[in-house]
Amino acid sequence: MDDRMDSVETKERAIELYNQPRQLWKKTGMTARKWISNSKTVMEGIPIEARAKKININMENLPTVKTLGVSWEAAEDMFTFSYTLPLEPITSKRLLLKCISKLFDPLGFLSPFVIRAKI
Image (cartoon, rainbow, N blue to C red; front, side, top):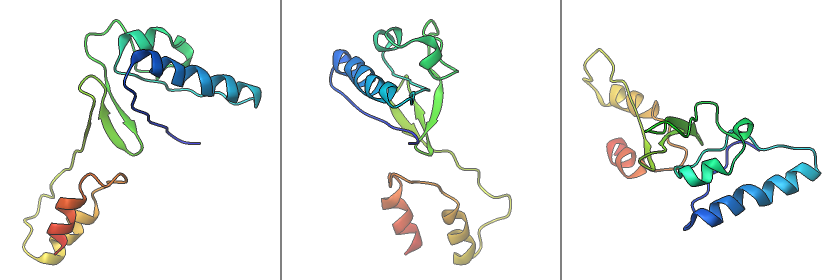
């Protein structure tokens, strides 16, 4: 399995979501790693060796982490995208489509904009 992402209403449910699969996977000899939460309480319940490497719960701001191919701002609980514009000017539809095709959006957040730009 690759990355997994969940959203829950309570911190208690988030801790449950950590413990249940961990116990199940332990029986099969697998371990989940690189855990991160935007809740300090939840992170305190996760052993240091199971956390994402950049995580220090004593930090004021949580880092940006890549998950599911996109960047997630843990502190803000939002996905972000970054794109570097080409140095040469975009003078044709072909060049515009070339730039658009370089956007990686596996979750489809940018689809409303990308589809309009392609038309």
